[in-house]
Length: 509
Image (cartoon, rainbow, N blue to C red; front, side, top):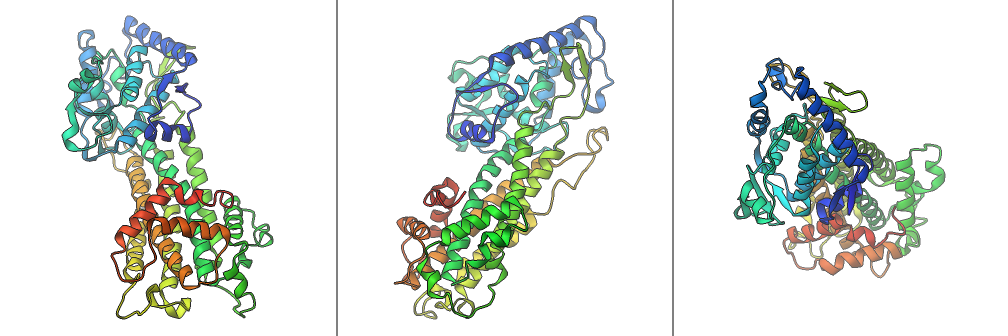
């Protein structure tokens, strides 16, 4: 069980909750903090001073005072009115990550939620109640209001949900029925609790966190793909020597160079052309460590941002039990998440565009010295011609996805929210970019393995031949033309699962 304490949730734990269905509980320290903050809210209700979101309206309606007899209705109305999302629902794994992140933030003790309500939220995870959360509708300011409202509706027996992991449309149940199916009762929200459930960046942070886990797997696959292609193209290993990279001490660049150097170590193909007379390789080969390294460093920044945000109080207003104050602020603003998500998409675009250029060299006989489109009897057969075209199409689309969402802003809520982050848009773009990049790299690996076959009886290094063998477990050598699409998807699945990278875990860090 992962104990949520509001300060130590990691990216790996988020993925474990989302994908491995690891159960979640509240840390003992968190319980005391939550109860102390709630006591402050109850005290404010007793003295009847105006407190934003407790006994006032929301957003531009913050100056409207709400009578005591309407305070419970105020919180329900907030969830209902803010559940305005549209578009395809978030995958169950993203919903699980969102619930975990929101529960962790509430466990930090700045929201004023009741312990009973927070416990009910945690039980959604443990009993596998997954609200239907539309993916569009958040501008990432005042948090991800629409997605989190759809999520929170299920807690009060409204909205729709899936029980278990069946994501088909027919599996949806009304919120009250979903709760009853696992013997949970709807929550009756008390003052401030609706606001506590929806004020934060947890939906966009969840989407980015899961994309980032995939991107960190992908960057290792990129080093493997580059090494395969460099060897198949009979490129030089010298650009990856440590002495080349030490005077330019970017950590990502040095790691990528170490990986590629280690992967090429012992290659008979590489030894066969040691004195070929070629002076320099093309940038897509020679600069692989520099480009892959820059992407690694960018992903490192994104990881640090996500792990801070995962353990940050993003409520408004914030409750301070030590002084008894309730203070309005702006921690819900998604700027850090939006910028990190945009940077993730840019890093993935770098990995994909350089990969596609190596793929083009592999299928181009004037550059590779190999049969055209990596097939015997080319002309009669087209081989992997269209696989490279697909890589080009995906890489081009990724350039559009790399255009930052976070530089945009559009005022909302009668201009009260006059600068917004677009963090959800940025996170969704990062997730889409990851899916495309997985396939661009899969195409390069498909082509590089086919090229290695044409160089027999020479073999690559032991590490790269293990990669080759794992690919051949799921994709046979291309002889007669066949649709490449299933082959691309099978290799992409190896990348996404980390299976491909595990074949050379000793060489690739």
